[in-house]
Length: 76
Image (cartoon, rainbow, N blue to C red):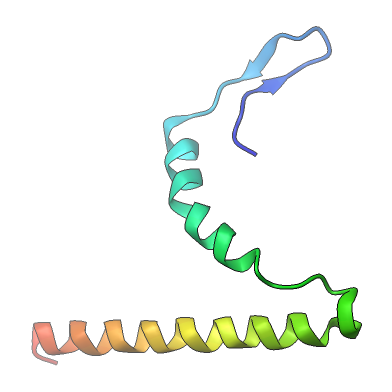
């Protein structure tokens, strides 16, 4: 959760740093994508397993393509 820490007296203890805010907004896409994974309680966890495995496969394919293009670009 992105927000300042507040103590019992409603005083701000910690402010959100610029780095924390940037990382939070960069990760929103991944948080939304992986929110598609169904809860583990459904189907004994098997649907969650298969959806997560599918995501791993897709991300691996994307990384492979990016690595191949990068290798071609620098002449490896």
